[in-house]
Image 1 (tube, rainbow, N blue to C red):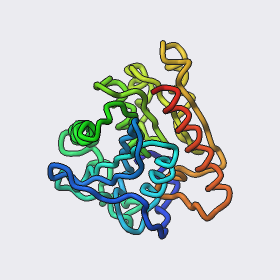
Image 2 (image 1 turned 45 degrees about the horizontal axis):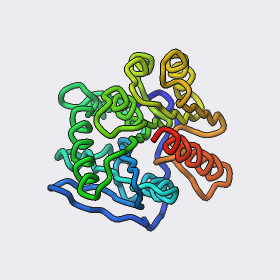
Image 3 (image 1 turned 90 degrees about the vertical axis):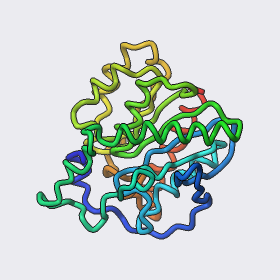
Image 4 (image 1 turned 180 degrees about the vertical axis):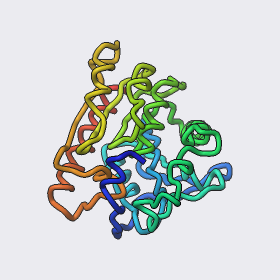
Length: 249
């Protein structure tokens, strides 16, 4: 986890009744919500689908309302793993979060996510949807930045929300082949990415928005959507993301 993530403290436990539903496709679990001719494949944060923190599903429901089919693969469970326990955050040194998040092959679960991306694309193709964007939170933002460098078939854009890049964001930004939207909270990387993308052909379609009055995780596991300021930032962010997706599609 990034320094911002560690400093932000525990996830916020909340209650929410999801609009979408969990589906199983070829043995893989995924949360599906909304409908549309363009899909958004979402990579959640390290807390995954834990009932105490339903904010990722809530945000996906809100994004789907803009006319998108949103699919969230259950990365950890689909790979015989488990999300990081909420009661172990912030982690103690002996919890060894750094080793856990690096994954078995040191790719930070990127290998597993790339495989799940293909599963989601096959699921979407079965519904006649062939164009998509990817969006990730925190660790998931790192994954989606890397997705943007793959230029896989059908990918139109990628979004990183209060993302963690472990000081490698410039390296990943150099590889981008599709436009990126970066939504950052206080202390999250953003300007360092824009410095790179401003020199690239995708520059005119990239979008950067910073919320220095919000903590890392405000649009995911730390989102308190009953708080007016948090909810306003969340709604504005989703409008920015939705417009970005439509402009880049």
